[in-house]
Amino acid sequence: MKLQNKTIVITGASSGIGKAMALRAAKDGATVVLAARSADKLIEVAAEITKLGGTPIIVPTDVTNVEDIRNLFLKATENGRVLDVVFDNAGLGFIGKIWELPTEQIQSILSVNTVGMILVAKYAAEIMHRQKHGHLVMTSSLAGLITIPDWSVYVASKWAITGFSECIRYELAPDHVLVTTLHPGMVNTEFFAKEKANQDMEKLDKNALTADQVAEEVYAALFTKKRKIIIPAMSKSMAFLQKYLPGVKDTLLTKLTGAVTYNKTTPEEDEPSFSYVEEVK
Image (cartoon, rainbow, N blue to C red; front, top):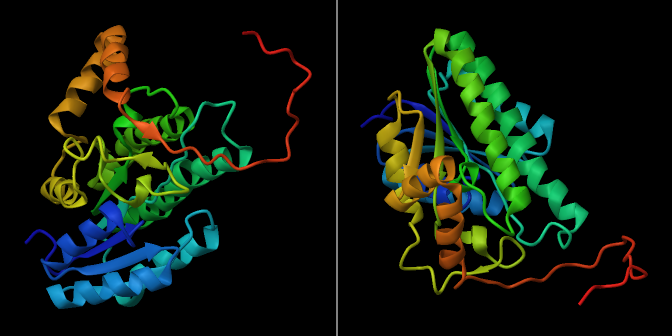
């Protein structure tokens, strides 16, 4: 019962890993502050939390909006509530070769996955610094430890979070505030839905983690000094190979991703086509 009588803030709480973590926290009777853009989905999650014995607080939040983030933490700490855990988890991804990705999609990935997550961490850190207590869990990805073709901007956003988290871990250590990064491999969630990463999961279901499995790993790491949660075992192997044998990693990754189908629906954008440049056959 790690979260009994404690408060946890979760961004990206309307679905996937965020929702799974919210329900796991509810089993301990925690106060769960739910943040995501969709108020309707948060209401549904809140109803499930109540049934499990938790206390939900709904705060519709767009992490690309600074005022929304400020309001989230004002609501979370109302009435003298201590901020015990912040699960900084909002994220999205669009897949494609860099010259195919629309500028708008590139900006969205970086706005949510990097700038948005850093701003959430900033306000969480200020409160926890004052409290001299708390645990900040940042959702990076296996993509925050390795390189993956067709995922360049997503990888960039997650490497940024990995490095950022390493820095603030040192900054917050004197205040007894813990910082952990989460690096899951493939997780079967709405992240891969149409108009997002838009990947065919049928051939990867047998290897994909469930959101509940990831939530259990996060729960187990709470209030410990664990720096990184890297799951499953294959992800640890890939991270090791990226660091010490990158050529071997590239070969294995090429084989693993060979069966993946990306259902590309790249929107048109008002950019020069460079049609006058002769294509070499």
